[in-house]
Image (cartoon, rainbow, N blue to C red; front, side, top):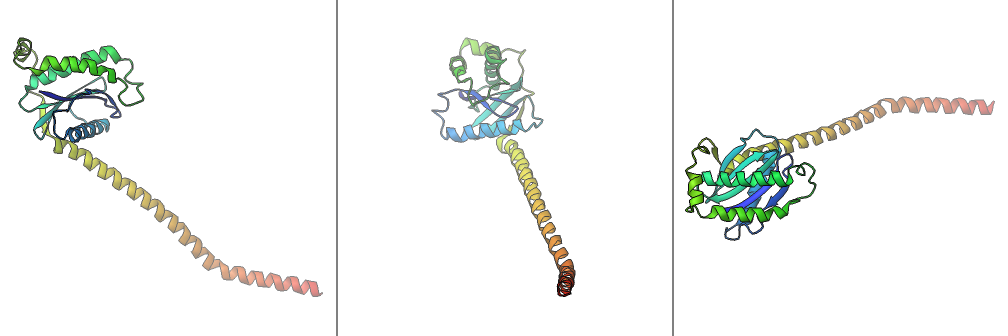
Length: 218
């Protein structure tokens, strides 16, 4: 069965819509939603991920498609047919593009198209029972093939993002430390110059003072 549905802009990971009543029968639903947001974050980094992928997580599996800089993702039971999962996403994609295609790039706030939930819920009901004639026909549709879609583990996928985060943090730390080192080096150079030229300045000052006093006395 379809458990969660979320839609996000790929360029920045901004969530655009989701099924509002999704996850009510899923233990730790917030945990899986957080994983989805992490996946969106990974995609926003511009990694060369396939436009269609399945990602295993616990007792469930994420399926997603990317079209027009938008990621359409659903989480289903592992036993739910992969072909139906992707056809469900295709239906969402087609309607979402029709309804909001010219507004996607300008959306500035999370869940700007939350009203799309109505279509999500209506479509999800059509796909819940795999035994209906409609869904049996979809499963037997030889023109829609999903065998070539890659399946990976969520830790493997998210691990790539975590490594990139670590590299980014290390780079920021090195930049900060380099800046601090440069400032300390300037201070040390300044102090060295003071130590080098201070005695000379003092001697010149004393000479000038004596010269000035001598002129005054004369």
